[in-house]
Length: 169
Image (tube, rainbow, N blue to C red):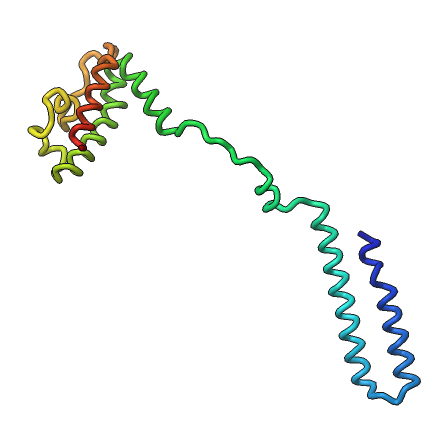
């Protein structure tokens, strides 16, 4: 770095000697000579700063260049999907988990499907869906009496999801 900074010093010394010679020996306007000298010294300072900046940037990799070189990360499965799979697994084992976890998702999906297809809220859609689905998603559905009882089998959950999909079509 020091070599980069000192590379321009001889040019500055030479410019100073030329200005001193011209001011003392030649009958030229001193103000004009000093302005030209200031311009030359300013140019040398800019050249020095440019060289120092170039030297410094060669030593460290820019974030942009590192991002271009980095391989794109492959994303795993979406967190929402993994969360939903956990809810399904828990709801099969436990009736309370079915009621408080998976049922919320089924209610939201049914509400969206009914609204999209028929333009009515879930509370008014009892006759637009099968009775088995309505029994699960109705707004006044009570929590199970035995919270530790096993939840519905996976086939029944799959059937409920299929019925929600049919409503949305």
